Image (tube, rainbow over all chains, first blue to last red):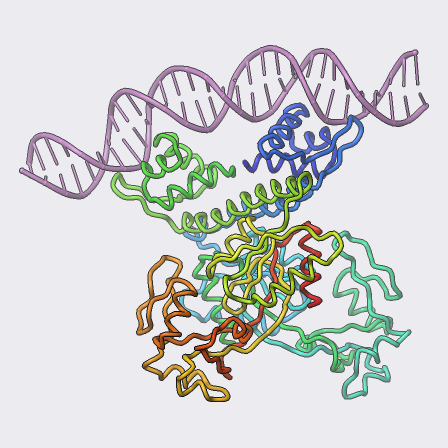
Length: 282
Length: 282
DNA sequence: AGCATCGATACCGCGCGGGTATCGATGCTG
DNA sequence: CAGCATCGATACCCGCGCGGTATCGATGCT
């Protein structure tokens, strides 16, 4: 199977419309129809059920859509990583490290310092991004290494090394009654009608139903907490970055957060290996 | 990048010889040379350093070899899984479950029984194979689900569900002094000159150096233990399958073995989901 | 019934993948 | 050191296959 055929099929399977898919692919509709037929013949499997009005995926088609997307991602990643390796060999292009904005900043600083002191260290571009984007960047080959937080981020498909495990704290307005407590439990927080947990958009950009305010980034969130309209649960290390009006109280029964450094398997880069080794020694 | 180009490159990179690679690919050498040049031009990266006598990989070439192999595997797996999905839709072809020969047989029997009792269960073909082969079969799409044993088998790139964790036991000839002990430690075993741990061949088929006898399968191993020429360390559940002349003693400080059920991500099969759910309930 | 929509079919041209013949560089050998 | 064998690159050619346009046939809407 050629990647061209796969791209064609994925386009049609996503659009469920030959005309639009052809347009998206920058080609005419008839050769696209033919290519899909040919693919079906070669696979010996019907991928699409088509009438002249509707196109739907067959069971096999759904499988090929899921698997094919992953395969195309792998091919594209291979290409990108090769390009980057070539640049790294000739010019001096650095590593790209991706981390969630606002998380693990202390650890990150220590890591960057320690790695910079290593012999043979290359420059490290730090990319800070929103939740859920890191895995994509790493999988697509646009980043070389990532800091992920289990159990929130998926480490599936990556090699990882654990760095630290920490408890979580709840962040409250300084004046709140709970702020004086030595520690709290999840149940203490769940019953606070005045301080609901905020809602983040899911991958589709939609918000789950619930009482909490809708937030889209950490700035909004911090502001809401400072205003006494929400609370949030964070790894302990984030306390350092809080300003005055906020208090942090350990939550005993919240899941512990493990920060891991993750990199794609098959990574052959000495720089990545050095960085990981440095991180493991912290 | 087309899979054809990738296959060409991988062939040349593995052979490090255009002529042989062309032969392996069933084509003439000149078009192969051209294809590689074209690929290098398009990537803007030298992949191979060639003199008229030798061909070597560049840094970028090594990256593309590793990443490209993985990408090709993904493409082939996508094709195979689609074919299998199509067969499953028309005919009634069952699941393929792969497990290590001789391990977890009791668990496996329970799982198969329990799953067979589920409504909508399909037939399950069980493939027993040697160590290290299961991951390959699963990755290549030749199997739908596998029983793996951490920390021995790599679960990288798969979704998994833990089934049981067990201690390990050392298996000795029944008459051996240690056989009477309630439990032992690794140190007790390491110092036995009469009962060395056997050596398994690595992926290349070569044996690591060391004192132990060379074994290639479990039958040989059992025989050697029964003969009093070796001992072996196994998960506790394997005791059930031992015959009379052998004794099993718990090893307190050996790593615990966790049996997990693993399946490829993106799996869209209801049968796999049912089987996993059944396994998790055991 | 007429029409618009949409996938399939028919047909065509050309670009590219693959073939053969040969060159040029390099290292071995007598 | 000359001659030769090896091996990748180049030159040139052919035919298939990919992509294009024109059109058909089926289907659902008005």
